[in-house]
Length: 315
Image (cartoon, rainbow, N blue to C red; front, side, top):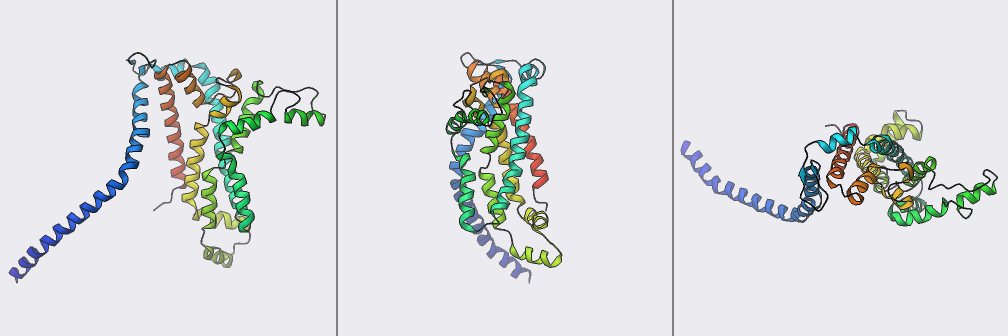
């Protein structure tokens, strides 16, 4: 009996080794398919992030060899950079809350409203709402510069003067009181991006049988359906949309640059991205700009982790 078991184990050993080699070859095929993406990821994401972290501890002007300074750039950012603390950080928080959170909520409401329409009007309206996110910043600012032009030919000034609300044109893009709200409005206008489309996909792919069962269990209106059925079913899409909203809100600094240049008048619409460009590509203080970019990366990571904890599906 023992000999039979030994013989069976001996016969099964070559087959087991053959299965292992087959799986190894299959793994190599997978690695080959992943190699192009891995190379692009390493070259354009991982390496730049590592270099930014290293340069953030140096004094580097893009010409001379970097000089190690330890945490001096971070200390300067927190204790001595009055522009960052008084203007850049508050502006970024306001912009991120209104455009990031507000745009996220607005994306869901619009997606849910469109999914209650038939296919043709839903497709047309979704394309109209999504189209601003596809246009480049230059195209957007050309349109909005016409609206907020500071003379009588500006559309907004013309409308307000015709209505008798103002007596003389307002210089919208120079006045520090109006510039940040204008940037926020343009940011909201262009915030319906891929996150908006993912929400539409999530709602349209909801299980209809759950709605029928909920109606039997006492769900009485569409709002209750949205809270108790729609949202729990589309948490992956909502998580993706939340992360995209956060990233876009914190990295969107081109609007104010295209409207007024960098820095904006009185730093009234200066965001963290604009601050990085100011120090990195105008003052050539690359080490300090790298430190600011690392801080921005940490802020985005913290908000992303929060969204993941809030919206990720629990096992």
